[in-house]
Length: 296
Image: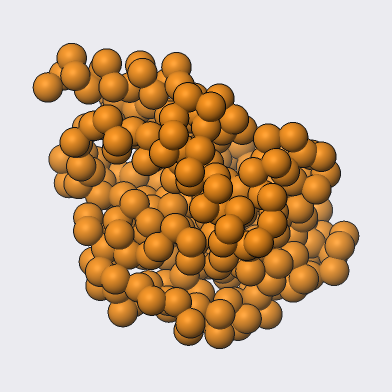
């Protein structure tokens, strides 16, 4: 991911080189060549996705003077949003997400936790089912991705129990291949370690404001970032609310920077009238630039 963009854009390539220097490893080679099982370890995945996202963002910014009214990111993506808003340096974001991934991976032994996406069931009903599963173990709604998709997370046995309840009630369950149960109480050890790590990071005031996962509201106060990022580790990602907030503030166009187009798809499900595009290749960059030029 990101290889074509790095080959076509000098600033994108420099971003990959900056990431390599930040952690003292050849992260670029891992991103471009794998092996996949190493790349998908969350300690590697997190800084890799941030790197690809900022490489795409910088390639766009180099050729466009457009500035956003708000920025937001889904879970890990909030770090990319903070970089975009000038509240955190890219180097610090790479270093922090490497540490965050390590802390999250080490918080729960392999096989103890699980996550599953729930389709065709309202978030309220998913939360009710989770309430019935807490007698088995930790389980909660972890990601409110769209009105029709909620992700649950927790102890493997409790998640399995809740999934059985949901199936009985007509919901569809998609088990997720994850290395840890993110955004639930089991991540508390990771949150504690991340809090200590973030004490060494300098944050500025986000311009534009970052619509945070924890509050689904804009934050423009740099002094609050550390606490919000720590809370995020164990709190649900309120993505649907975040997108609806921005739309309510008059946002009519969203641009997703980073590998894939998952967020673009979720935004389309939240509000099909909104224009949304993803930038992660030279072709998608050119298409986006042409689209914005035509609308100016």
